[in-house]
Image 1 (cartoon, rainbow, N blue to C red):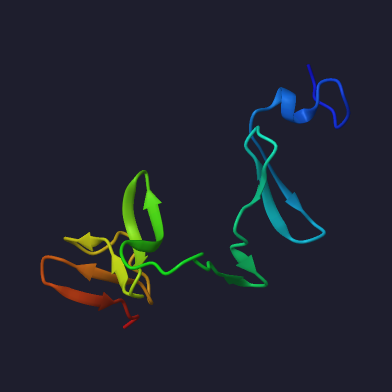
Image 2 (image 1 turned 120 degrees about the vertical axis):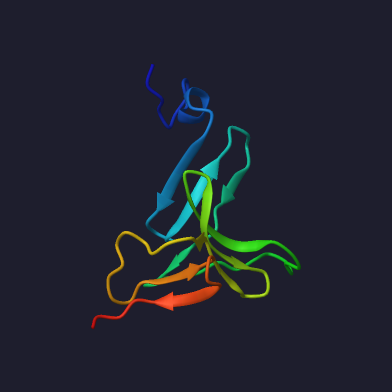
Length: 113
């Protein structure tokens, strides 16, 4: 049965969780099935990826990129950048590639010779 915006069979009665983009204010919204509609954080501002915490963060990561649950990149609450330790050169080691070689304890940048 398809949902509609009017009774009976409201969209929220058919689907328990909805996420949508409002082009008017440029924000994402989530309805978790209750009467409360929550605004999801606006992560894209113009051409920038931004996130503002709602309070002071004193531990943990502010941002993470995972590859199949394996953390490959993060920025912690202090603003420190963390790269996944590598024991060998990456397969795609083109000019400008930055990586941490944990065997040698070095930060490497690939350059074209």
